[in-house]
Image 1 (tube, helix red, strand yellow):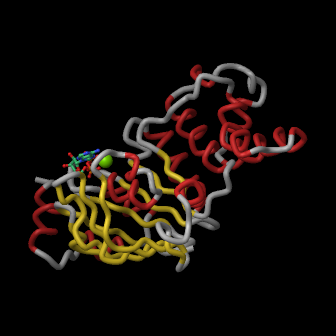
Image 2 (cartoon, helix red, strand yellow; image 1 turned 90 degrees about the vertical axis):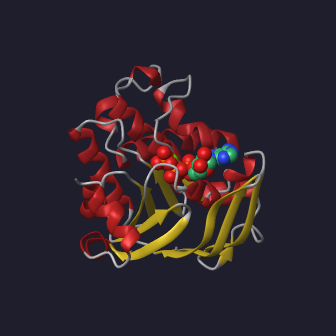
Image 3 (cartoon, protein in one colour; image 1 turned 90 degrees about the horizontal axis):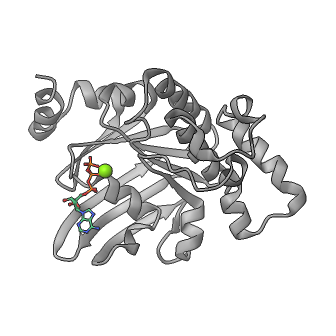
Length: 247
Ligand SMILES: Nc1ncnc2c1ncn2[C@@H]1O[C@H](COP(=O)(O)OP(=O)(O)OP(=O)(O)O)[C@@H](O)[C@H]1O
Ligand SMILES: [Mg+2]
């Protein structure tokens, strides 16, 4: 399901954070968002999954559509957050067992006792964690490694059957092997859900994202096919960011 932003403006109190952002993140592929620290990448993701509005001073103008449905007008916040889930930079282990971490969302929304086991197994298999944890499903999730925890966080989100998943720098604290696992997982997930990833790693965007959006100071300055955008940016500001940072 495509995610469409039309003239999206976001303020935190008097600060104008996102300025007239218009973009379409297509379904069945990965789209990347790149840009320097503080340009508004996290704010953009949080506006799409409707958690930005939990911050004091948040104000928005413009539309965000999921498959043509207005996320702010046609859906309530809870439904919007379930439909478009978000995975954060630092994976969180909820203070409970591995299995209960996966089932946290389904239990909150109500899941039949008989289904719980199957949901936990399906989601853990999907993130390629099942074989590593199947013999210790009842032990605390906090014992897992960073890479395992990031996969567990993704399993927790998958348990809610979202239509799209937004990832905010999911690999920033991981080693190369874990990064590769997460990238493979995202590519697989993109077969059935819309995937948007914020990354500081341009090579990562090259490896997995069909389209890339470049955000500078809250403005979407370029958007298009990743390879083309990274090798032949059209605007001077983009060149400064893309080529300046290599020097
Ligand atoms: N809750 C908030 N209240 C006020 N200002 C905020 C809030 N959250 C973020 N900001 C400001 O909005 C701007 C964009 O922040 P954001 O976190 O979206 O940037 P980012 O591109 O994700 O940066 P980074 O790459 O460092 O994660 C920054 O100037 C930040 O200080
Ligand atoms: Mg951020």
